[in-house]
Amino acid sequence: YSLLKAKAGRLLVFAASCGNNLRACIVDELTRGEAELSGGPSLIKTERALGILIEGRTIFVAKHRHLELYATSDVQQVLFHASDDLGQRSIRPFQSLSYADIPLINHPQFHAKVPSYLQAPSGSILLTHFIDNTWHAIILQPEPQPAHDVPRNYEAVKALPLGASEGDIYGISVGEGGYRCATVGSNRVAINYAKRWEKDVDEGCYTLILWRIPDPEIDLPRPGCIAFDEALGICVAGMGSGRVWVGDAVPSRGTKKIVAPSIPDKVPHPDPRWPKLPPFYFWDKIYNGPHPDSCIRDEVVPGWSTAIDYYVPWRNEPEAYGGVNWFVENVMGIPGPARTVLFSTVLLSQEDIDHSFEFVDVHGRMFLLTNQRDYFGVRRLVDGTTLEDIIGRLRNRRLGDILVEEEEWMSNYMALDQHLQWWYSTTHQGKSNK
Image (tube, rainbow, N blue to C red; front, side):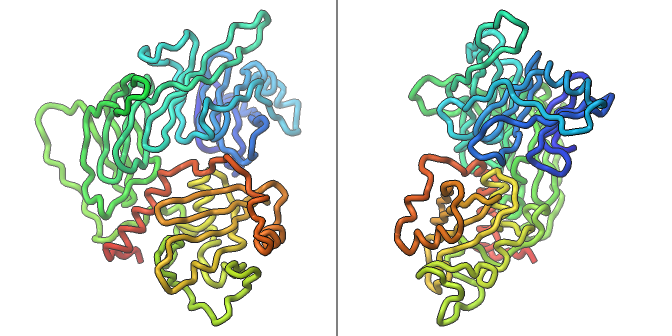
């Protein structure tokens, strides 16, 4: 089991188990009986459990695109008979609902207590999340108690934003009470206090305290690597170098001179979970791979080639930082494997380019990835689309017929911002990561 998200008495809820990042399960700590939270219908079945809360008779599970509610009575019944049943033990949600006016969320946190300034009905649950450097809230309001002894259904109501932060944010941790949050950016750690916003008024939350991070041009924060104790006013942020910064909003008497641990004069590896560092990237302005032949290899359609493993050999490597597996898992929030199967040969130009495209196969589903320097886009193709279908549509200039409209797939800009900052630091400042 991994990624413990919630605990109530003997019950432990994990977001991953059995080596499967999609298999959320609940475990009885005493008997070791387990049951899988199988999930309800969703747009794409490869959705992780991002946040989990056990409150009363209900288990709340937040995923990228929808919220699932499970009954603790169903869990207890399955766990009670766990020793008698050697087969698959799974539980279905009694309610599945989408988020209010939001296609997807990222970095969600549940709060059993809703701050008074949100004026929520009794029994409500607060779900905070972070998008576009803005701290948002969704209030889960209970519907009237049914006559029989069953869990309540809930309604997701969008609340006003709680606050905003300047610059790129690489991690956020909201306090248990929902009043304060800690954020880590490229050069700072801050504690912010939420305030109620009036409609159509663009202003941020209060910044209570801010600490500057040493060596920001070299040492970058790890995405999501931040913890915050709201009651004590202490936050902790982890950096790519392995250094850990601790901020105390209520320090003891006297001031102490802090000596920052030294690091080599180079940008540390940003994420050892992806150990291979490619020699160049899709967002480099000039191609730096094998020199293109007079005739481009495997050019199945003018301007499109399947020879990705020849021209960009690192792109499909499972452990490459910035590779397609990294992008799909960290930015789209979908566990791999993933593979680029077709790319636009404009990438091979020896002149300055400002865009590139690639088709990616993820669990048999096809996606179109667009890179236009400071903008990244992802479009899904209709289910069942094959590489041969894509090639045929490109020949006939009818690709739009198989593109799915009105979907958002960029679920985590924090990892992407960190990667681009690392790329900028290593490329433009002459730092070496060898």
